Image 1 (cartoon, rainbow, N blue to C red):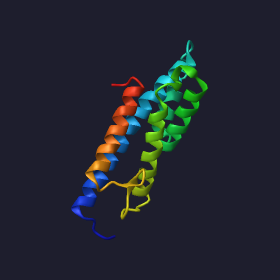
Image 2: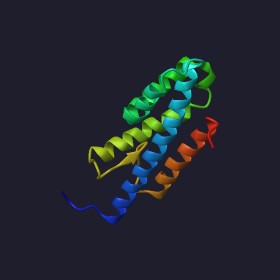
Image 3: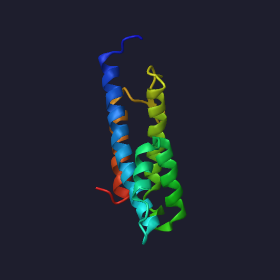
Image 4: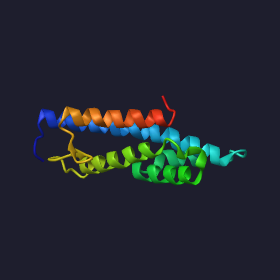
Length: 133
């Protein structure tokens, strides 16, 4: 395995931290919509925990997006979040499939501070549109 530069290491670290932060937000959203979908029974909290713990990042996106698209109560404000999640998943795949030379976010190089700033802005703006602070 070849060595990576300090800059590349920091770029990768930034992306991995952002992926984990986004996944934690996605878990919050998925849990909220699953619990809401199960009212008034709330019979299967263990199932909800299993889904949150065992599904992949992209599976969480797909499950949550499916539930939200089926419920007009949630549609407003979530489109940008799912767009962000899918773009971040593309970046995630580049990292975890060890394509480290030209990692991008929406075709922008993550080695650029402006791209990292855009990634954070996209996440924060989409989160605010969903009403999550």
